Image (cartoon, rainbow, N blue to C red):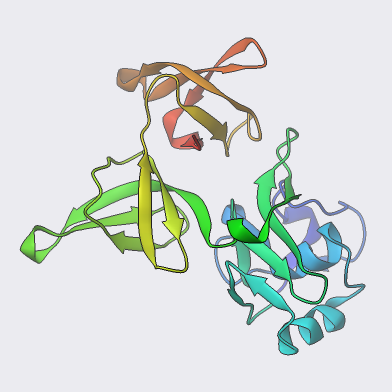
Length: 215
C-alpha cells in the first residue's frame, strides 16, 4: 500500500503538493524517513525511484555502514548514509524547523550513532538488555538508565558509552512542537516528566520522552 502525500509525516522534507501518493516505509513512518526520499528528495542524487533502486542494487549506498537493501527501509535520527562512488557521508538530523535533513560527516564517524534507551530488561545470568528507540537492542555491562542515551558502535556491534540524562547535558528535541531545537538541560522535573532546556538563551519546558541526550 502507498501513503497519501497529505498524510505523510510533517518531518519529511517533501512538497505537500504533487503526486497523490508517496512511498510507505517498511516500519513506523514517524520514526524516520525512507531511503527513497533521502536519495531523491533530500540529496537529489537520483531523479526517480528507478534510479534509487538501481543505486541500491548496484551496491552504491551504505546505511549505517552496511549495504542498503530496500528503498523503503527508513533512516532513523542520527543514522548514517554513504554514497560510495562520490565518497560522501551524511548523518540524518533534524533541522531547526523540525524537518529531517542531512549533515556532512567524516568517514571516521560512519561507525557510530546516538540512540535513546526506552527501557531495560534483566535477562538470565543478570545480563542487562537495553532496548533503544527505533527498535534495536543490546546486551551491555555499561551502567545506564532508561531515558539516558548511548553511543552505538556499528563495527563492533556494541555500546561504547552512556550519555546520562542530567543537568548540563546537551540534548535535542525530536518530537512535539519544539522538535529540532538543541540546548542544554538546566532542570529536571521527573515528577512532571519534564525537563527545562536552555535554547539560544531562551528557557523552554519539554517532555522528557521527547528529548534525547546527545552530549
